[in-house]
Length: 197
Image 1 (cartoon, helix red, strand yellow):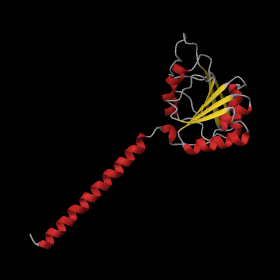
Image 2 (cartoon, one colour; image 1 turned 90 degrees about the horizontal axis):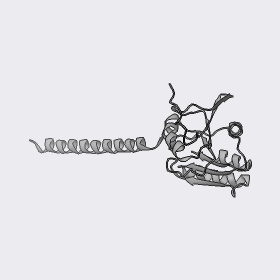
Image 3 (tube, helix red, strand yellow; image 1 turned 60 degrees about the horizontal axis):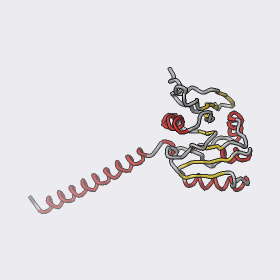
Image 4 (spheres, helix red, strand yellow; image 1 turned 135 degrees about the vertical axis):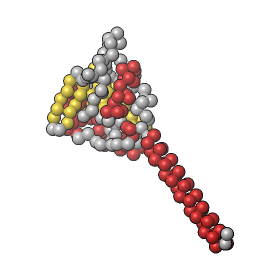
């Protein structure tokens, strides 16, 4: 084989190796993106008028401990605190947590609220009397058993636009293109909520 042909073969093999490594890196990066939890990928804020309707439906009051799972910029927690409740917001995004703290400070309710950068599946929600949700259906269904397992009977749950596939809501309200859902955690002795048919 001529030296020119040898050089071309070496260059070709090097190019193939570089392309293979680039492809492996791209696939690895894609796989890591796929492994991210659904609830950290999308942030769509709830309009303030819908926030107000959610809190009205949930009958929030001064004795409530309100948890917003996937709290975004904290508007639900801040609004609940302005009605007298204590609030806890949980979100994975450091940017959202920063905004939530800024919004609480602007509203003068920092003494009534707390924002945690945490996975909602790992959050300690046992002290909640009221839960707020605006999560995709797949995340709602992942959260379903945690809520029934950890929340006290009678704890209220209110959700914007999405519901559980295995737990029909106690109330459902449609307004201005939005749907709000309301549940109450059943007594421990009661059977779990019936699956949808």
